[in-house]
Picture 1 (cartoon, rainbow, N blue to C red):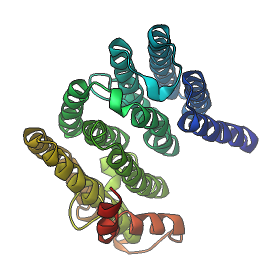
Picture 2: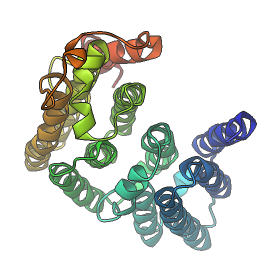
Picture 3: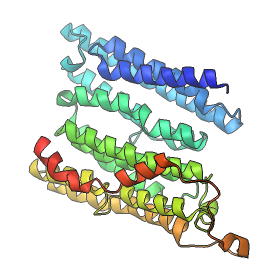
Picture 4: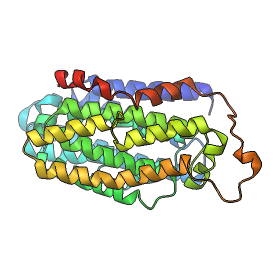
Length: 346
């Protein structure tokens, strides 16, 4: 892919995201979603591998169906209320259809089937876009329509997403699929809190995007796609492996790292809403995803492959440490002290 084409597709992604998150009319929001979908397809299929073409096809069909449901939901609401404003979604059927459409776009259970397959067929940089920037417009639509959402449906999908994201990630050996199920599990935490505290859901998304960006960039720098190759990184690039360890533990939500902050605030807010059972269940289910995060960290920093040579045991860095990776790792692990300031703004 030429640099000019890559620049056009990247600018289209930014345009579509900005158009959706800044619009008040359903048609412009839908147009932004479509621009995003058309811009990411060439980035998914740029390797021309059959697996990449399959991933692009699955992504296109799923996102097209979800966009059609978004348009159908807005038209149904406009038919009954005469309003095309996003914040004026009041018709019950429209709210139900929109919740399902956004769940498809995000990859929430039971509409998660496409996301791990698309991630597996995409490069790591494109997988980063799918896990972060492409999730921002649907999250923004949920934020703007949060008073009208079906809370029972969202709570059920959130708990099942956290359970399935952790459970399905246990037996994976491909790093991209593990990160896909990690994204599904984190989306469960966002979905369960967005009807009660939309700002907290956005905070969770921003911190998740920060931590997963550090993980993806580190994996891309050490050229790792499988657990078997992850085992050799400590002997080749110990500094990057240490950064990956910290980012993974933060993504798992272990205190005193940054990833503990959103889980802490969400559990506190659910307790205030008298949802103690839901808070307990989703906290216990997050232990499933903790297991495969610890396995990734273990493979990256502790284990050595069999039959290592003396050359592999020499600690050396083939390339200088990327400053961006270092900054992202530091911020994704050391933001917990700013929690008092966040408490005052919530």
